[in-house]
Length: 267
Image 1 (cartoon, rainbow, N blue to C red):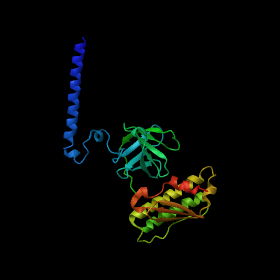
Image 2 (tube, rainbow, N blue to C red):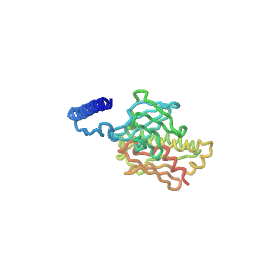
Image 3 (tube, rainbow, N blue to C red):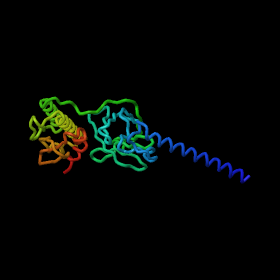
Image 4 (cartoon, rainbow, N blue to C red):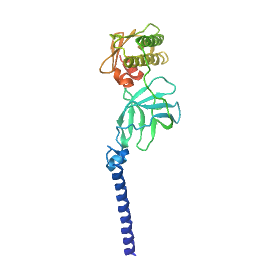
């Protein structure tokens, strides 16, 4: 009986060896196919693709409760996200999480999405600090900066954002493109500046709208100056807010409303 079990085990072991050989052979042969040209042929790379590729598929997602959102790819790593009930587009950067998860964070360092290696997705917001499971619902819109054909369109957007911030503070807050000539205001830089102005007005309103208690914070300011540079920056100079954007980085080259709020609220 013992010898029969041993022989059966030996035959089973041989079958497993042959099966492993077939899998390895298939992987090696697939590396020579056009679809795998230039790709690593190791079993590790086959099972665990590089994080250089977007983890989430572009499209529309919905949490178990709350508003749906759109995900798009900013580049091979970073993501863009927009909630369907909001105009703001968030630029998210991936960081490594436990168990091989990828956590996408805002420019304030707050996690907004967590993607697991098994395809799970969790959304984090102020209303969902513990996270809510989200599911892919289908194709979504492409998220790209607005087209600003000329400086006059940009200045109209600055005026509109200025009026919105002025209502929040209950006094005039001037929005201006600081030290920028019409030559500097390319369609790309104008698009980033316009989006930054909109985010700034949103930050003023969110602070002032907190049961009226936040209004004294924003009434300190009467001017917001926007310019371009090599790094995104927000500085407070007395009653003036100075915001620098990086034009060629698109949505990743300007601060979110949350980052602007964090600076405005500092003592």
